[in-house]
Image 1 (cartoon, one colour):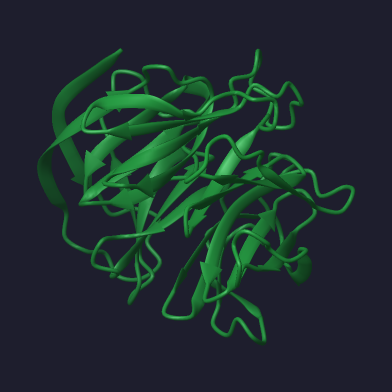
Image 2: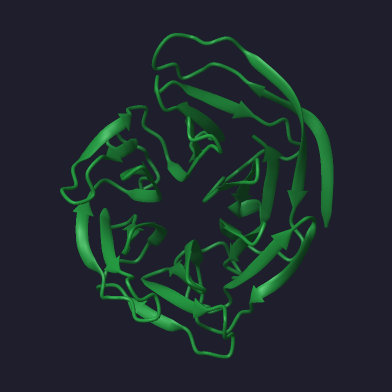
Length: 296
C-alpha cells in the first residue's frame, strides 16, 4: 500500500564538526511507498521516477543465492516491475545506466540488462572469488567504479562500449567501501564495517584525483554509512547510516553534519542506497521493505 503523511522535517544541529548553525524547520510531505517491494536496498533515477532494486528473498540475506531479485520502476505514485525475477539477480544493490544498459551490483557480480531489448539475455560480469559484497556503482567518463564492502576493494571497468564492458581491475583499497558518488572529478565514498561495528576508519572519504587515487577522510565521524548522494544544488552531501539509523546532510564547505529528523510512525531501521532527483529524496529502508520519500 502507499500512503502520504504530512509531517515536519526538522534539521537540527548535532554531531558538530565545526560551529553550531541555526536550527531550521520546514513542513514537507513525506510519502511511504511499499507496494510490491521485498527487501529493497537501492534506488536510482530513471525517466522522471526511480528504479528500486529488491532482493525478493525469503529472508533478509544480502548474500542469498535464491535468484528472486527484481527491479521496480516507480513514478508519480504508480509502479511496475521493470525487470522481473529471472534467476539472474539475488541481492541487487547499486545501479548505473549508460546508453540503455542498466548495470546492477549483485553479490559477487555485476549484471547488465539491455533495457532497449528486454528479451536479450543479461550480461554477467563476475568479480574475483571472495569479492562477495559488490555494493555500489559510479562513473566518470568511460570508467565505471564498483565498491566491494567485505574486501575493501574498489574496481574499475572500461565502459567505452557499454554493450561490451571491460573486465574489472582493482583500482583502490579502502576500509568497507559502500556508497559511491562522483562530482567535479572527485569521488566520495561512504564506508561500512561488514563486521557490524564501525571503527575509526569507517568514515566518509574523498578521492580528489581519480587517475592517481588517494583516499583522504572528508568526514571523520565513524559510522555504518551506506547511501551517499549530492543535494540538487551540489552544496551538500546526504548520507544514510545504520548506527544509529538515520539520514544526515553534510555541508560541502564546512563539513558540518546535520541530522535530518523524519518523525515517522515506524522509524527507519536500515536506510540504504538513496537517490536525490527532481527535488525529492528517495531512501530505501531495507528491513522494512519500503521507500521513504520527502522533499529536499
